[in-house]
Amino acid sequence: MRFFPHTVVGRSFESFLAERASASTAAAFTAAKRAVEWWQSVVPSSNGVEYTGVIDFAQERCVYNCGTFWKLFAPGRDFIGEPGAWEADAHDGIMCDEPFWLLELLKATVEAVDEGAQRVGGATWRRYSGRADFGLAQTTAKRRLAAPFGSDELDLDRLKVEAWIDGTGRIRRAAFHGARALTTLDLYEFGNPAPIALPAPTEILPEES
Image 1 (cartoon, helix red, strand yellow):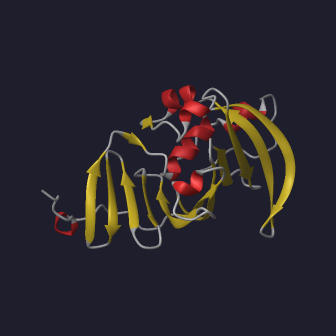
Image 2 (cartoon, one colour):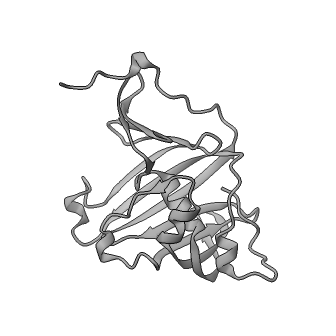
Image 3 (spheres, helix red, strand yellow):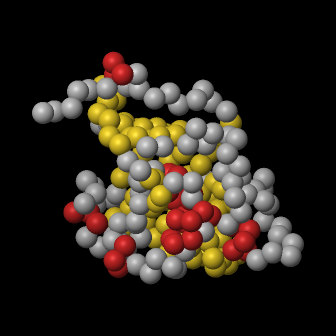
């Protein structure tokens, strides 16, 4: 996901962060959901969950390893299981546990503050903190966005988000402060890997009767 460099002339930081991303690349990612309050009753570990995978921006697909199983998301369909043995389901939007969800939300940033340069893992990135409008995100996203978990406890017009931008203008880390969890997304190894293929019909398990 590419944004303009942090030197912004004649534009507010929020319009800078809300700039539409190029869909011509792919990236590896790590996402983590850290527990706060009673979220540990929903998430398997009190320390949260973490998974790694690959995003294919061109096809709007992503696949990631959850440890004991895999998830694969594509427009209109999602799969859970492992290569060769998938359970398939249909959906009509972008689910909260897809990395695309956070990236689409970030595009709807309506307030932002430049927090300055920050060292992260040996690299220097520029950090922005801001607020995103979920209703606006619904209108700008290519597909319907699922409501965030605990949405009845949130001000959906002012969701707290953060973004870390590298010197080339790429988002390297994004964060969403939810009702009971902090979700972070790290992007790295940008490039053009092999496209993510959907499971073949022979790899999809029959539905239980």
